[in-house]
Length: 152
Image (cartoon, rainbow, N blue to C red; front, side):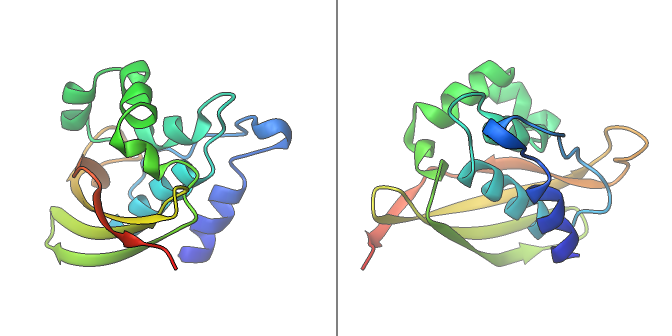
């Protein structure tokens, strides 16, 4: 499944960072694959069209979107706040904290562009959006980045 996800992510972009297609929430993705898809998208975000931020926003849970608002607000929240460390990061590592049938929590360590390491907690819940997403994982919240050290 990880190979399918990586192939899907690699097909997101064409020349000049133009979005080829958007990966939509779907029952085929596991909770960790959703976190990795969102992180990979933010890691490869284009400043031209913010396609990575948009891809991440597509997997924001409807309850989350009630607080973040439309994409324009979500884009500002990522690009203009402490969450900007997620953009164009050097690498990231996920670790499962807890999971049941409806909620999953992950610890995500991010090696950011500023040569610092941060930790965030990513929370996902299952939801129904449409026929392809009857029981799919979507992000309900992400904690503020916590500085945990300098990179070597």
